[in-house]
Length: 109
Image (cartoon, rainbow, N blue to C red; front, side, top):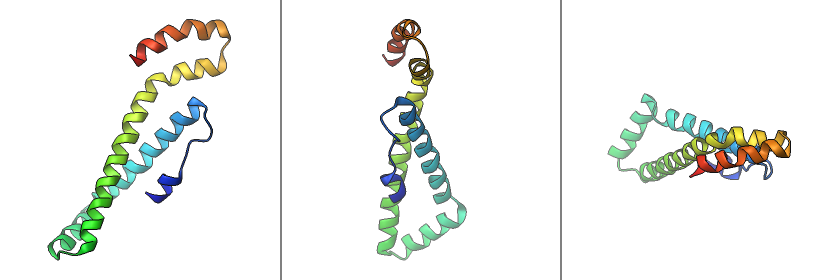
């Protein structure tokens, strides 16, 4: 989570921002899957039964991980709907951009 916290998009370009959220969703999904592996679930259960303080902290970290994963997935899904428009905006002539703009706005709303 700490490495993801420090990660940031490489510039303000919309395609960089899309890639950032895509990468973040992928990494946080892998971490969440690892936390749900049988061995980790057993360790979490043992800690909970032993009423260890670390168990509470681990569950708080897990809940934060799930929230951040969900946010990254939601942002990635939304931005995917706009990705083709951003490619067109960055690569095409103004006339093509002007034609694409109304449909891009429609997909946002």
